[in-house]
Length: 189
Image 1: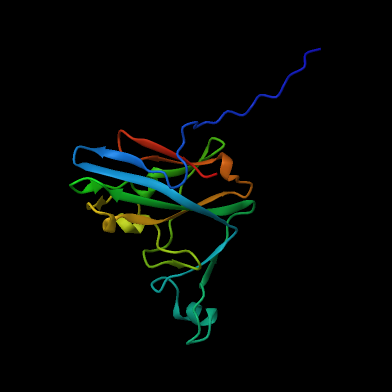
Image 2: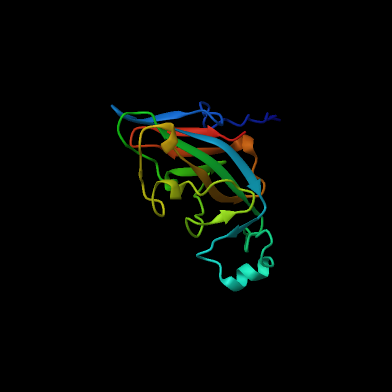
């Protein structure tokens, strides 16, 4: 009789960065740094957009002159939840640097990759979520943009992923090909 002992789970990214730890990318005088500085798990969220929601939707959400709540409730598929990942990219060089696009950040959970779900427009406001989608800080709809030197020019925002509700931060990573030479991985927990 052979007794098998359980095999310890291996960490797919043993050198993963922690939250708020920066990875450098670029070269010469075009250098930037990027970080994943936080995350939030939500079973659903409310959002509003003056250019998307009709006056009827806005009026039914709350009476005039009252605090406006989100007009549209976004719900994931059965068994899923939303993962908000907060990203910051800064230019630390002397010249403008290409910023990684939102599409260059994927969530890796147990070897399965998840792409972000873009919001409907640059004027979308999500209840109790600060800022805007990272993508709209640097370009249009996932295209790469430039970031000028200086901390005041940084791109900062969230990306939303629909992931299984069984997600655990200790086994979930954000992976990004920051440029053609540099990949960074952050462990959420």
